[in-house]
Amino acid sequence: MTAIGHSPLVRRWRAAATRFTTPLLPDDYLTLVNPLWSARELRGRIVSVTPEAEDAATIVVEPGWGWSFSHAAGQYIGIGVQIDGRFVWRSYSLTTPPSRDGRRLVVTVRAMPEGFASRHLVHGVRAGTIVRLAPPAGEFVLPDPLPGKVLMLTAGSGITPIMAMLRTLDRRHGTGSPADVTVVHSAPDADRALFADELVLLARRHPGWRIVQRHTRVEGHLLLHEGNPGAGRATGSSPRATLEGLVPDWRQRETWACGPTAMLDAAEKAWADAGIRDALHLERFSADLTGGEAEGGTITFARSGRTVDVDGATTVLEAGENAGIPMPFGCRMGICHTCVAPLRSGAVRDLRDGAEARVAGTDQGTRAVQTCVSAASGDCVIDL
Ligand SMILES: Cc1cc2nc3c(=O)[nH]c(=O)nc-3n(C[C@H](O)[C@H](O)[C@H](O)COP(=O)(O)OP(=O)(O)OC[C@H]3O[C@@H](n4cnc5c(N)ncnc54)[C@H](O)[C@@H]3O)c2cc1C
Ligand code: FES
Image (tube, rainbow, N blue to C red):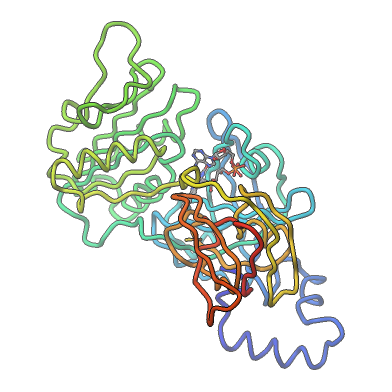
């Protein structure tokens, strides 16, 4: 997901143009004319940043050259935004149906407390800002044809990929979609509920859709299984709602779930206990990188000729990006393996479970490591 996705024609043109434009590369001239024209990387221009509920914003991006407009509803893109002089990459789910007509990408970002990139995107960037883009990816999509009964279980900003799915179904069928869809969406309160009004309108347009919006500060978290941790109890004496009570036929529904880690862990347990884990599709927004501690050390990126000193909390991916190296990446959370790079020597530790990968100086060959979840465990050499 670095310099990316361009056709053989564009690559041949670039090679030919290089001969005539040296010492500047053709990219340098293109960018002078229009910052969205780059044959080296995908770029976009922020068209608008619109507040969306409390502490969130919908960001519209006009992509430049090379963007294919062929995402599936539910997929995410990478956005690289310059903060304090360096590009910081994060993943965001597209919220709109695939469309070549509008030629715009739309994401909704929730500013995380202490969040480095999300706070900047929600409160710092302005229309006109040029961002880098990585193409759509992800398996969290609806099949075609749709299963007979669908449940969408979301909380917080986890509604974003589901919004793309609902908007796609709405556009495909117009009023009165034949799909049997139940959506259960939780937000802390009305002020922080994303897309609340649109969800009400969608439910009115499609009699077969049932959309339940819950406010956890008053109602507590939905109980997904017996023994579901008791955080966020309902106020007053009313018992917390259960999935069983709210959606009695949940076992018959193919389910797409996206939300905080605790909710997704509880859903995994509930579906596994019911023996229907295969009917549950999950999208996680973050990996738990607290399962292992690395010492940190000096990482040498052999092919780029860069060396950086890092602490044990900085992933190899972040270290490379901070040093300006075009690192490959996808999900940034240990799932897609796009970031895999060869470890030539030394050791790295997987921050999810503490497992160490080591290549001794005398060893022949390398070991493949996932840079997005690995940190230096002493000095090491990565073949990038
Ligand atoms: C496939 C995918 C799709 C995503 N889609 C969206 C989206 O549509 N909208 C959106 O707002 N975000 C989305 N995210 C999350 C987003 O990529 C960032 O992780 C998020 O914006 C926080 O980035 P940050 O730089 O502000 O936080 P950081 O500065 O990286 O982290 C700040 C603190 O928050 C914690 N943290 C970071 N992310 C999360 C999280 N998701 N949940 C709980 N704690 C977290 C970190 O552990 C850290 O303690 C998606 C992530 C993935 C992997
Ligand atoms: S970026 Fe997906 S596994 Fe590392």
